[in-house]
Amino acid sequence: MIRLQSLYFGSIPYWATVAANKQIVIDIHEHFEKQSYRNRVMILGPNGPQALIIPIHGRNKKHSMGELRISYEEDWLRIHLNSLQTAYRSAPYFDYLYQEIEAVLLRKHALLMELNMDLLRFFIHRLKIQTELKTSHAYELLPTEQEGRYSFHPKQENKVLPPYPQVFQEKYGFVSGMGLIDLLMNDLSGAAAYLKQPALR
Image (cartoon, one colour):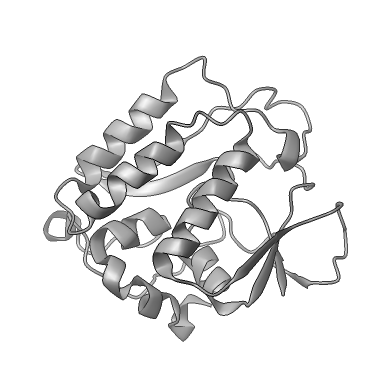
């Protein structure tokens, strides 16, 4: 069992960890960290890597992840959906995945944690991962589970991942560091096996 942070879509190494554990505990009591994957995901579009970021209320105050509210004052939802279409409409699994992802996002969750958890459940189902999902009961500085909350951050994930097909590979070559959505849109059928590679852990 491992304790992890809640991420928006999640990075590929994060999902390799999810797939490798029979039980994961999502920490809903940890404090939100700026410039992290908790409210952002990297995708590969026609102009190269692009960060999709969810704006939040009170980002200059300390909030636990479980109480952090999404801001809809700017139309980020339309931007994210349009960006996903532009990046992946020619990907092999776009037609299979996009409408379901769109349906999750269009629920307009009040809390970031609710959105992230819905996406987590959706991708566990799509990947057919046999992982039991739990949430924390309180913040623990030294949790009883294996610690994984600080392992996945844009500034730390700088290793080059094993290549997989990408829509804009002819233009950019293989680009590492994209979110799980990039892997699934391009190679959903091979994604579960890809995540088991030792190089991802």
